[in-house]
Image (cartoon, rainbow, N blue to C red; front, side, top):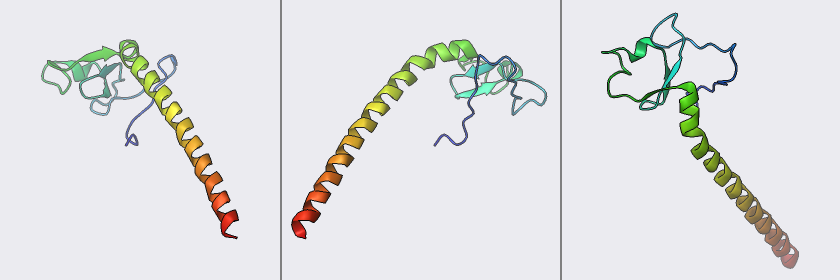
Length: 102
């Protein structure tokens, strides 16, 4: 599901990523409407991410999305603990059933 996504470290000043649509242009923004990184040329009138698209700086995009992602990660970790506990219970019952059947 996320195989086409790119991860960026916004604190890494050395990191540069070229725009997929404009050769030689570096991505500097995030189109929240399309969920992709874009360059400044992508945001000009008539371009795919202009007019009615919500284009944010990387730091603003992080501020918008970090809290919900952190909450989702916490939920996933809790579910993982629950699944592990259930798996352990099933494994324990499996051993007991095997002992009784022997």
